[in-house]
Length: 132
Image (tube, rainbow, N blue to C red; front, side, top):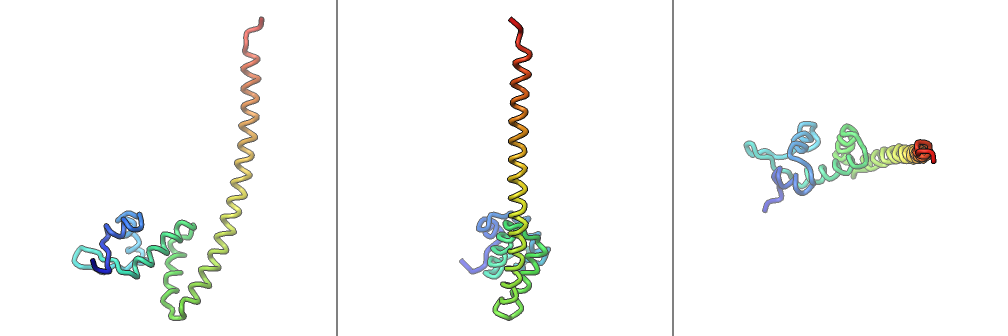
């Protein structure tokens, strides 16, 4: 087997659809080799897709991911890319922690409302019981 992967092999290895791979290619995030209609993804494409998938999982936009991938080619042993990735990751962590806190508050508030609702339902059921 060669070092290149077909679109099907890439899809299977990274659990993404062929449509997703074509979309990333159109957005100039991946640059597969072309043999007629066939796309062949190189080791570099695999490394890029790994970063794209991880970036998406962490909530980065495709534009942020594209900018980070472009920094890889600056020729400074990826120092600029690492520094920018670190800063973006710190910001994303702050956002996620805030969302986590807000979600926790919302969950507690909803639990309180459910408890009140359950009590009101109990009272309503008791008051609708026939009198003896």
